[in-house]
Length: 84
Image 1 (tube, one colour):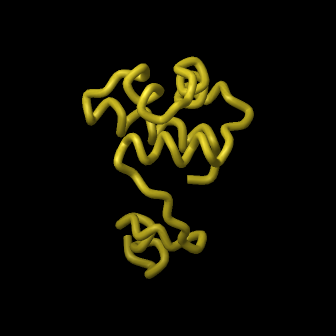
Image 2 (cartoon, rainbow, N blue to C red):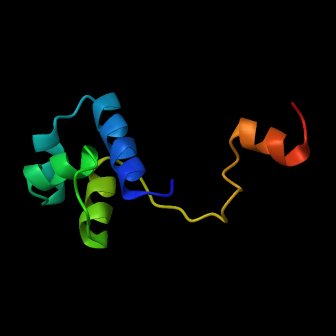
């Protein structure tokens, strides 16, 4: 993920997969529901690190850092190795 918008979408997908409403996650994380809604919809110009970490914790997610280009996605690995 390279943009805040992509991160917001990933959070929304995880939340929905867990069957949680935005209000549930907002309450668990201490983030205003409107802020979470804007973040998930890509309408937030900024979403602070404390908010992000709280939301991720509420969803049972962790933040990991990897070097660019080494995400491990099968298609990307194939491209790196020259396979079709």
